[in-house]
Image (cartoon, rainbow, N blue to C red):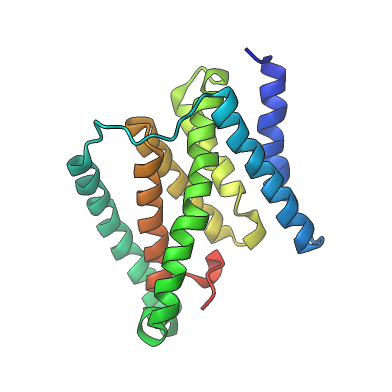
Length: 208
Protein backbone atom coordinates (compact mmCIF):
# COMPACT_ATOMS: atom_id res chain seq x y z
CA UNK A 1 0.00 0.00 0.00
CA UNK A 2 1.30 3.44 -0.92
CA UNK A 3 2.10 5.95 1.84
CA UNK A 4 -0.59 8.49 2.66
CA UNK A 5 1.89 11.28 1.90
CA UNK A 6 2.29 10.00 -1.67
CA UNK A 7 -1.44 9.94 -2.22
CA UNK A 8 -1.82 13.46 -0.79
CA UNK A 9 0.86 14.80 -3.13
CA UNK A 10 -0.73 12.95 -6.04
CA UNK A 11 -4.15 14.35 -5.10
CA UNK A 12 -2.73 17.88 -4.88
CA UNK A 13 -1.12 17.67 -8.33
CA UNK A 14 -4.06 16.04 -10.13
CA UNK A 15 -6.93 17.98 -8.59
CA UNK A 16 -5.40 21.35 -7.73
CA UNK A 17 -2.11 22.13 -9.47
CA UNK A 18 -3.04 20.97 -12.98
CA UNK A 19 -6.58 22.47 -13.12
CA UNK A 20 -5.44 25.82 -11.71
CA UNK A 21 -2.45 25.90 -14.07
CA UNK A 22 -4.81 25.65 -17.04
CA UNK A 23 -6.23 29.06 -16.05
CA UNK A 24 -2.76 30.63 -16.28
CA UNK A 25 -1.76 32.06 -19.68
CA UNK A 26 0.91 29.85 -21.26
CA UNK A 27 1.05 27.96 -24.60
CA UNK A 28 -2.05 25.85 -25.28
CA UNK A 29 0.08 23.04 -26.68
CA UNK A 30 1.87 22.77 -23.34
CA UNK A 31 -1.46 22.63 -21.52
CA UNK A 32 -2.59 19.89 -23.89
CA UNK A 33 0.59 17.87 -23.29
CA UNK A 34 0.27 18.22 -19.50
CA UNK A 35 -3.39 17.20 -19.69
CA UNK A 36 -2.57 14.10 -21.74
CA UNK A 37 0.26 13.11 -19.39
CA UNK A 38 -2.04 13.55 -16.40
CA UNK A 39 -4.83 11.50 -17.98
CA UNK A 40 -2.45 8.70 -19.01
CA UNK A 41 -1.19 8.58 -15.44
CA UNK A 42 -4.78 8.35 -14.16
CA UNK A 43 -5.52 5.43 -16.50
CA UNK A 44 -2.31 3.72 -15.39
CA UNK A 45 -3.27 4.11 -11.72
CA UNK A 46 -6.79 2.81 -12.33
CA UNK A 47 -5.61 -0.22 -14.31
CA UNK A 48 -2.34 -1.21 -12.64
CA UNK A 49 -2.72 0.01 -9.07
CA UNK A 50 -6.46 0.07 -8.39
CA UNK A 51 -7.05 -2.99 -10.62
CA UNK A 52 -10.05 -1.44 -12.35
CA UNK A 53 -11.27 -3.51 -15.31
CA UNK A 54 -13.84 -1.03 -16.64
CA UNK A 55 -16.56 -3.66 -16.75
CA UNK A 56 -20.25 -2.74 -16.73
CA UNK A 57 -21.77 -3.99 -13.50
CA UNK A 58 -24.49 -6.57 -14.22
CA UNK A 59 -26.80 -5.46 -11.39
CA UNK A 60 -27.34 -1.80 -12.29
CA UNK A 61 -30.79 -0.49 -11.42
CA UNK A 62 -31.54 1.24 -14.70
CA UNK A 63 -35.18 1.95 -13.91
CA UNK A 64 -34.33 3.78 -10.69
CA UNK A 65 -31.49 5.63 -12.39
CA UNK A 66 -33.66 6.92 -15.25
CA UNK A 67 -36.47 7.88 -12.88
CA UNK A 68 -34.19 9.87 -10.57
CA UNK A 69 -32.24 11.43 -13.45
CA UNK A 70 -35.44 12.48 -15.21
CA UNK A 71 -36.75 14.19 -12.09
CA UNK A 72 -33.47 16.04 -11.56
CA UNK A 73 -33.34 16.99 -15.25
CA UNK A 74 -36.86 18.42 -15.07
CA UNK A 75 -35.87 20.64 -12.13
CA UNK A 76 -32.66 21.71 -13.87
CA UNK A 77 -34.53 22.40 -17.11
CA UNK A 78 -37.07 24.66 -15.41
CA UNK A 79 -34.48 26.64 -13.47
CA UNK A 80 -32.07 27.09 -16.38
CA UNK A 81 -34.83 27.93 -18.87
CA UNK A 82 -36.07 30.71 -16.61
CA UNK A 83 -32.49 31.93 -16.10
CA UNK A 84 -31.64 32.10 -19.81
CA UNK A 85 -35.01 33.62 -20.71
CA UNK A 86 -34.52 36.53 -18.34
CA UNK A 87 -30.76 37.05 -18.67
CA UNK A 88 -29.91 36.28 -22.32
CA UNK A 89 -33.13 35.69 -24.26
CA UNK A 90 -31.37 35.77 -27.64
CA UNK A 91 -29.49 32.59 -26.73
CA UNK A 92 -32.63 30.68 -25.65
CA UNK A 93 -32.38 27.42 -27.68
CA UNK A 94 -30.47 29.44 -30.29
CA UNK A 95 -27.98 26.74 -31.28
CA UNK A 96 -30.41 23.86 -31.60
CA UNK A 97 -32.78 26.01 -33.68
CA UNK A 98 -30.28 27.72 -35.97
CA UNK A 99 -27.37 25.24 -36.02
CA UNK A 100 -28.87 21.78 -35.45
CA UNK A 101 -25.95 19.92 -37.05
CA UNK A 102 -23.42 21.73 -34.85
CA UNK A 103 -25.66 21.03 -31.88
CA UNK A 104 -25.71 17.30 -32.63
CA UNK A 105 -21.97 17.04 -33.29
CA UNK A 106 -21.08 18.93 -30.11
CA UNK A 107 -23.34 16.72 -27.98
CA UNK A 108 -21.68 13.56 -29.32
CA UNK A 109 -18.12 14.87 -29.02
CA UNK A 110 -18.81 16.33 -25.57
CA UNK A 111 -20.33 13.14 -24.22
CA UNK A 112 -17.57 10.84 -25.49
CA UNK A 113 -14.42 12.92 -25.22
CA UNK A 114 -15.15 15.31 -22.35
CA UNK A 115 -17.69 13.77 -19.99
CA UNK A 116 -16.35 10.22 -19.77
CA UNK A 117 -12.70 11.25 -19.15
CA UNK A 118 -13.88 13.73 -16.52
CA UNK A 119 -15.83 11.04 -14.72
CA UNK A 120 -12.90 8.63 -14.82
CA UNK A 121 -10.80 11.26 -13.03
CA UNK A 122 -13.28 13.02 -10.75
CA UNK A 123 -15.44 10.11 -9.71
CA UNK A 124 -13.78 6.75 -10.48
CA UNK A 125 -10.23 7.66 -9.48
CA UNK A 126 -11.33 9.99 -6.68
CA UNK A 127 -13.66 7.47 -5.02
CA UNK A 128 -11.50 4.39 -5.50
CA UNK A 129 -8.22 5.95 -4.44
CA UNK A 130 -8.78 8.71 -1.91
CA UNK A 131 -11.82 7.76 0.16
CA UNK A 132 -9.67 6.34 2.95
CA UNK A 133 -8.05 9.76 3.38
CA UNK A 134 -11.35 11.17 4.70
CA UNK A 135 -13.08 10.17 7.92
CA UNK A 136 -16.34 11.84 6.93
CA UNK A 137 -18.28 10.72 3.84
CA UNK A 138 -20.04 14.09 3.70
CA UNK A 139 -16.71 15.91 3.65
CA UNK A 140 -15.43 13.45 1.05
CA UNK A 141 -18.34 14.26 -1.27
CA UNK A 142 -18.11 18.00 -0.55
CA UNK A 143 -14.42 18.07 -1.48
CA UNK A 144 -15.22 16.14 -4.65
CA UNK A 145 -17.63 18.90 -5.67
CA UNK A 146 -15.03 21.55 -4.77
CA UNK A 147 -12.26 20.05 -6.90
CA UNK A 148 -14.70 19.41 -9.75
CA UNK A 149 -15.64 23.08 -9.64
CA UNK A 150 -11.96 24.00 -9.46
CA UNK A 151 -11.40 22.08 -12.69
CA UNK A 152 -13.46 24.78 -14.45
CA UNK A 153 -11.35 27.69 -13.22
CA UNK A 154 -10.15 28.27 -16.79
CA UNK A 155 -13.57 29.74 -17.64
CA UNK A 156 -13.07 32.53 -15.07
CA UNK A 157 -16.78 32.70 -14.36
CA UNK A 158 -18.28 32.57 -10.83
CA UNK A 159 -21.56 31.18 -12.18
CA UNK A 160 -19.69 28.29 -13.81
CA UNK A 161 -18.10 27.52 -10.44
CA UNK A 162 -21.53 27.43 -8.80
CA UNK A 163 -23.04 25.26 -11.53
CA UNK A 164 -20.15 22.79 -11.54
CA UNK A 165 -20.07 22.64 -7.75
CA UNK A 166 -23.76 21.70 -7.67
CA UNK A 167 -23.20 19.29 -10.53
CA UNK A 168 -20.28 17.80 -8.64
CA UNK A 169 -22.55 17.13 -5.67
CA UNK A 170 -25.10 15.37 -7.88
CA UNK A 171 -22.49 13.29 -9.70
CA UNK A 172 -20.69 12.35 -6.48
CA UNK A 173 -23.95 11.20 -4.91
CA UNK A 174 -24.79 9.15 -8.00
CA UNK A 175 -21.38 7.48 -8.07
CA UNK A 176 -21.45 6.90 -4.33
CA UNK A 177 -24.79 5.15 -4.74
CA UNK A 178 -24.14 3.17 -7.94
CA UNK A 179 -20.34 2.84 -8.10
CA UNK A 180 -20.84 3.05 -11.86
CA UNK A 181 -18.73 5.26 -14.12
CA UNK A 182 -21.18 4.52 -16.93
CA UNK A 183 -24.26 5.76 -15.08
CA UNK A 184 -22.63 8.91 -13.74
CA UNK A 185 -21.21 9.65 -17.20
CA UNK A 186 -24.68 9.34 -18.73
CA UNK A 187 -26.10 11.66 -16.08
CA UNK A 188 -23.29 14.17 -16.57
CA UNK A 189 -23.74 14.08 -20.36
CA UNK A 190 -27.50 14.65 -20.06
CA UNK A 191 -27.22 17.70 -17.80
CA UNK A 192 -24.28 19.20 -19.69
CA UNK A 193 -26.00 18.67 -23.03
CA UNK A 194 -29.11 20.36 -21.69
CA UNK A 195 -27.13 23.43 -20.60
CA UNK A 196 -25.71 23.70 -24.11
CA UNK A 197 -29.14 23.17 -25.64
CA UNK A 198 -30.96 25.76 -23.55
CA UNK A 199 -28.41 28.45 -24.33
CA UNK A 200 -25.76 28.36 -21.59
CA UNK A 201 -23.04 26.85 -23.74
CA UNK A 202 -20.86 29.91 -24.17
CA UNK A 203 -19.94 30.18 -20.50
CA UNK A 204 -19.03 26.48 -20.43
CA UNK A 205 -16.76 26.53 -23.46
CA UNK A 206 -19.17 25.08 -26.03
CA UNK A 207 -18.64 26.55 -29.52
CA UNK A 208 -21.76 28.28 -30.77
